[in-house]
Length: 308
Length: 294
Image (cartoon, rainbow over all chains, first blue to last red):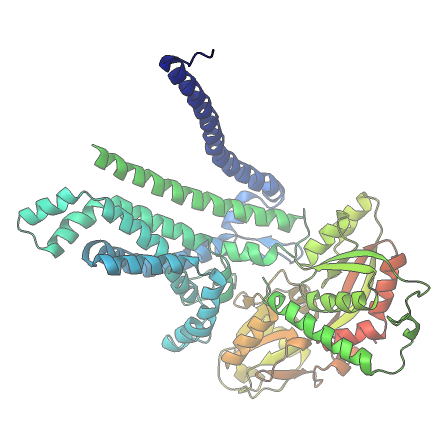
């Protein structure tokens, strides 16, 4: 005769299996967590390793301070300053477009729109993020280049401004979504408290909710900035790519990303120019890494504030 | 990168249809013994060839491979773009049989290949005529090579100095990595000089043609195959860029396009190269807007 397992034994059996499963899952999750860090470190090491020749032969200081980018001349001139400034100019314009529009849109969606409108708008913004950058580039070529040329009476519409406007539009989804999340995370008690003190809805929004979500909105802006500085295809099509030291946004600029994308295919692999392109990548990586880190620290500060 | 990549399959399909139609009509071909009907043809080619490199050559290389595979069902040819440097690196790494290149191989690359015991052989497969184009509204219709050099070096910055209207010249160049950029620098700007820093570097021939169409003060250079009715071709030293003037050498701005192999090609590779250099291959060169070898 079989004796049915006692209740206690059955419970113990289940717990053991569950524990084993938990251990496996925990191990997998640990590995995944570390994997992201390993990949990031591997990218940095890979870039640095391939840049060694550039550091040795062209010199990091010379490259960072050089103002002439003629990589295919003999000997090549690898001054990165026009490229760094080009990226900064385009990104600056992009921020000037995406921050006011993006934050205002987030405030509207979070604070003033009804539930139906809110859902529709959020879907549309998600769709904006899904449009390939080459499509934004094509629209820029067809619409923004002629517009900038006519409005500013320039001899060419391929400028930092053109690229920046399109990049600003492209980084809108990032800015809007994250700002909206930050506003949404502001505890409802704050709004009610403000209303109880006799503030109108506008006063509540601009004096209480937006300042309370301030660091989250800042993080949104930083991530939008990261998106803009890393974008390649659209700027390659729109900014004219002349490696001049820009003085205004109405000049043509060459960005770091555009330079890497345009030149990598044709260079002698393993050559000096190839290595210099990796060095450009390393500079870009350092910039975006710093931006993302800053955004993360700020977000963390906000999380801590509401946890209290 | 190059938008032409997206058009390439469509063009290749069109060409395939075209060559099929031609094959149906043409009466006598030297290779008529190798008609598809001759099942037991004595020397049916078999094998596979991999080709990688220049985006400039991508369309014509695809057209070659399609036609050649059509005639020789036993042969499998794969063609990839990616750029001249990518192709030559792949050849040196032994991953492809032929590298397409729109520039001559560099000393650095030869040294690397020799280090691996390779003997890189250069084959000129087509000529690329490079036309200087301006907006149709521009009054200038002829420039000397010297004037062009001064324009692209940034020494002449206004159209009125070369017989045009009073407007600042907008320089449009291919990107610094392109073989065309380097060739134009050698042929026009001058080895020891640089392009004017204000020159806008555009990623493709179409981008230059598009901007010249839209900008009355623009001047740029594009491959003969990319000339559209919306741009005006400027004669250089009184010679207008056409397939004929580029082929006979009277037009001063034209260059060779190359395929590289490790050692002299043998077997199916030799047959493919001979076919490319023969009448059919060179006809495709012309169909794609390049200049056949004389």
